[in-house]
Length: 176
Image (cartoon, rainbow, N blue to C red; front, side, top):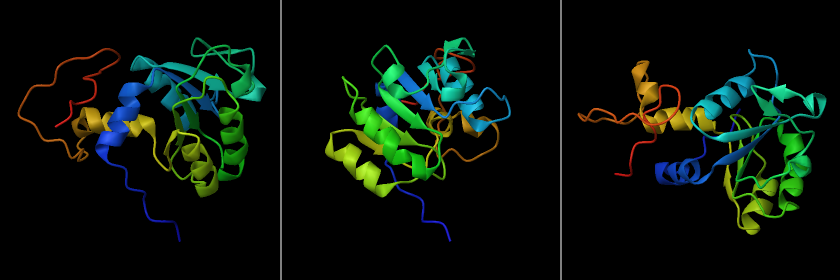
């Protein structure tokens, strides 16, 4: 039996997505059918700087972005580490993230990924941690894009959305 979904206030998710600019996507894949590839492509289209991390692709370009073997090889500060690896890999990734200078602001674990001890360690160091969520899905939900496809986004408004930057982007809906 899987654990109950974690509850994160929309304001927290919105603050994270509004506050980060550079995302290291650990576990990026060059296969277009993989979720990590689609998330990389989507976040790039929304204007984020997304840096793929995969030792097997290091030195290659993925969707026009240089791929790195690990977090410590990235030559610029990163705001968020998005983890597309199994829960057993999370402690090592969090330890590597905590060794960076400056520290990232956020550790984000993808759908189905949780590691309570690693999360507690990152939070103790001052990082925000989101587990078992997808930034692509959360961005689409909070911007109202998911609602275009008939899925209840929990966003109801009679106001016409204002076009933002990026592919089909209306941007994140303002705080209510």
